[in-house]
Length: 286
Image (cartoon, rainbow, N blue to C red; front, side, top):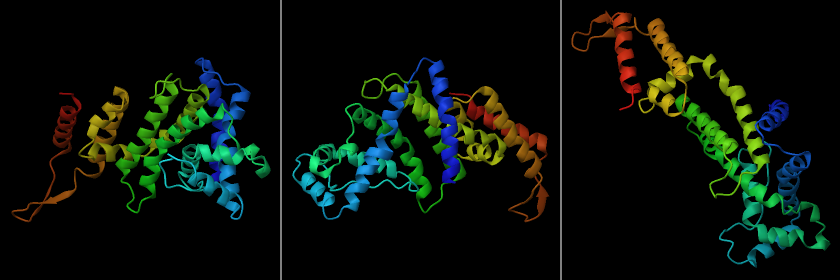
């Protein structure tokens, strides 16, 4: 699975770069190299070296952390990046940024030979932007990791949230702090959008997703409207729900609570008319 996912990402990377270039957002090969080296080489590499050196690097790093005031954290070491563990990239990067001062002090000691694990002045601001992008996935990964499996409608909403936030970063010229969003971050966000859309387009191939959203009391058709779905897509979703109702549920026998005698549900045309009226009433904004 990891090999397959890596292949998908690589195949869409060039496409993302080309599509963003067509919109005037360009990144050079040098900029790509600078960005690509942040987590796998520098941040993750230093965390691995520190944690693997229990007699030299780890004690020295802990000493530097203890002697650095105003860190506002109980962290004393750097979290490892684990390729198969969700959010480990975020945790690893977050620790590196949070403990920047002791990190720079450690990698600045020539006798430790850690200069290759120092982020450049160009990489530090990129690392901060990257951390903000990775936070987008935190809620979803925590939800999917919990003991109680998310319901179908919850899973769809999580995916929609990810796409919305990635598109916002891709299309924004400035971030929440008012500073410009780096072109490489915008391209990376678009690459994430392409990966998500590659699988999310299968939404229409399985009707249960649309049905789960429409039948969810707090969502219904309003959910699609608020998230910018086109009228055509909403109409298709409505038709899917009504078709499934007509084919599978409208003729199911019911039991009269008073007489306990089975009878057929009302005819499809009546039920469909009622559902359409209900959905239209909910769909039209007040």
